[in-house]
Image (cartoon, rainbow, N blue to C red; front, side):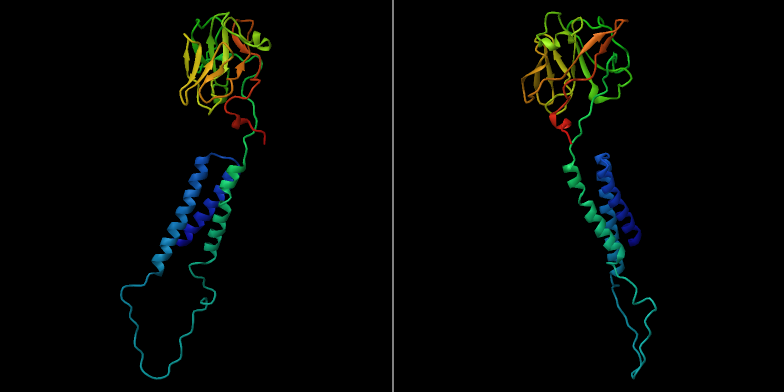
Length: 262
């Protein structure tokens, strides 16, 4: 039992280190670390049971007089105790596993792009494409790039506002199509979904930490902890009247920590 538990503990500790180095799911890393610790605990318990003496010890009494000592078993010299080779290997694997927190703290997020590309149609979570006149003024819809509804970092809030409502910089003046304007749904403060829109004040709300974004000015932060505007997605209309993206976001989505260069 002790040897089997130690082998499991060693294998789990090494697998935990490899999983952390490859950036796999943190739940997997934590589960392997827990399995390794459990293996050592079971091995220690089994070893303690083996070392425990019985309640009553008896020793046969020999006749008086000189007697020749019994020969030691052939493997007595080579036999290892509880702290044998497997224990040392277990200690070594635990030491290796100790670098897992350092690996996690030292890794920086890589800068990547979202799934939006030029010509990608805006579709609902069910995959239905939207035309420029599908939404009424004041309506809001969560959309994704066509064929990539499984890309959460690409979630976008599509809003329909009055044609004269937007006050965008000249460089982004043509990013709105027939009152349709699109912003990233991921809050720039902590990455929560910006899920509420108040048409009366034309404000987007993040329910996590109460950041408020002003839609007419390009989703600039109005109050709350967010300090950066929601990235805007440039829109266009294809030959069939469907809303499409001109390309990916020009600004990083979500909190700045998600996009640090390694």
